[in-house]
Image (cartoon, rainbow, N blue to C red; front, side, top):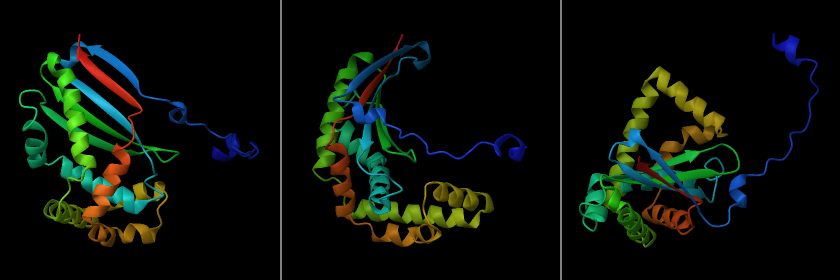
Length: 215
């Protein structure tokens, strides 16, 4: 079937794709109202990561480890709720490698009271400054490294997980040598690596801000 339908199609050069994100000057705000959100309101900041996961594995690994530290309950309690009691009900990060041209990082804050949404935005401003000034410490980094290495060890013992793990990384463009050396790379990441990459990403402006509001 492949031969039948595709053999006669001549090869050709693909047209150059221009990323719409490169044209954005300043941030774009989108508001979405829905009955499905219940009483929950959220604000999501989308950042364009200034390097590609596949082209800078060290920075990408440092960013992934740092984000896991930022999502720890202790950091949330001491870093956010301590300053924003009864305002923010939760927050999280989502780092996505998109294979082509750019990667993105979403930061989402949620609150159960819509009147607190503006204050939730203020809490991100506060937290962002704290992150840029360097908030990762050695103790937390070692905990996350240990957890990540244990998770990788279990993954390598599971036939379905290890095939998915290798397949996903091969699709991203990594060599077998890169994939097999991830454990050593994780071990080599320093506190400075984590703080530097967080500063690099969050010193830029978000390319979009999306607010999800109750109807």
